[in-house]
Length: 300
Image (cartoon, rainbow, N blue to C red):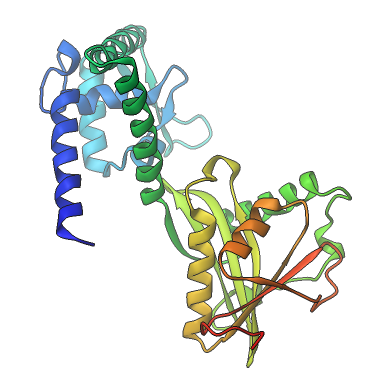
């Protein structure tokens, strides 16, 4: 990563924080800084669990508590214990809080118009398009990959979502019991690994690899939530799984997929996988792929 890129990011950050008023203790001409206003907006009309607020905004417990107490003192928010579990606290807007949030929305719209008003139509189009691209890339940079036990709730959620999508998109439906079975022990090191992708602590994707001694490593359970597609998550998962296999001596990776999963097929081909003859009897598969992980061409 070159220094010029780092400096450009820093200049961008300084410009944005100044332009949006992040340095002002009275954000949008109200009696509170941006942090409190942002939390007020995030709570929303339906309320929100405090732990979810911390996760979404990347706040530590102490900072979130201070912001909430300030809003409570102003009569804008109330924090209540959950009916089923008193340890789960939920923040809700009061009547005054809902009115304040509506005013913040109105003034935020005015600020956005002020960004665009001095520009020509072409410049506005360029700015809005660039902002959309920056938002996507910043979101992609927030995605975290890491190993998970197949039995943990987030892992079960991802695998269940993977099965549900296969069933929804396949012409014949999908029955996981009818295909090649995968024992959870095969997705735990050293036999294999299951990687989860998380965005703001929420699971959005998964992928697995299992080893077969000196034989090809097997890529399995590749899935990315529809809302997270376009962020490069699938390619990152695939690359990490390949790297994990290579580090443990694998020289070849194999995988199979269904013809309905056009995006997956495109990903595999663009990642260096070539189509080969069927190497297993997976009834759901229409395409079988192989890639040499040592960079050589298996056709030579």
